Length: 320
Figure (spheres, helix red, strand yellow):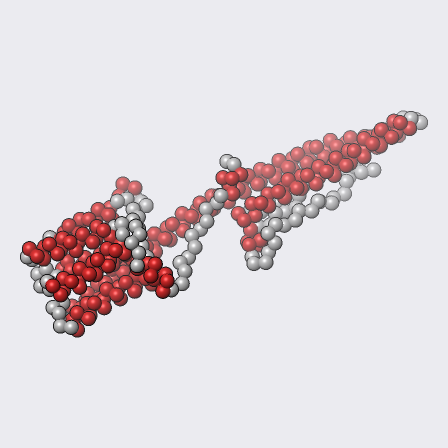
């Protein structure tokens, strides 16, 4: 595991933005491909929704009562297959088929099933890919032609039937939006699990670095302190030591104390260098360096981007 592997943590998906006309136009007036995602689990049934849509389209295409109705039913049901990859064009084409069929070849009681069911399926496939607000607008746009055709006197059934068609469209949007919400919640959960695993791995690395720094400080500082105290006590063990020897021992002691101070500063800086990971929200408590603050305290507005790590000033028990 490298430093770059740890730094590149996945970001949790952001929430959908507010409802705007520009966003509505981007959702309902596009030809871009939006493939229907497969099931996450179980893996051997991951393409089951696509297979069911194709089978449903085939079954609905055979519900026409006459030859013309069968041809229209086949063409209209094909919009469900198109909706598996391009739901917005499929929805617009299905809406055109619905209005055109009601005007040119009004569905009878025997073959009216495919006309409304296919469009409800196209609405449901659309709701799987776009926000709930845009899907609700799509359902409203789908219901308006039906009401207008009935008001104009076309054979689309009774007003009770028209109300049932509107309920069918609304139910299709609710089912599609519910499935989309479940999929988004599952995706956010997977991302959060990935972030948690990333932080756990990062915490392990930082704790190991802190442990190494503390052990290195303790071992080396002990030996350097012994050198310092021995160099300080050596002139008193010899009667009338030469001045050159006293100066050399004093230099040894000064160098040992200076090295000990630099070691303490280096160990503290070694621990504080982990503050580059502060965005991961890790706290490491080290004896040889300044504590690293947990992420939420740093992520608040106005919080400093990096905490300074001053040198720890502790009394030297070996200093003479």
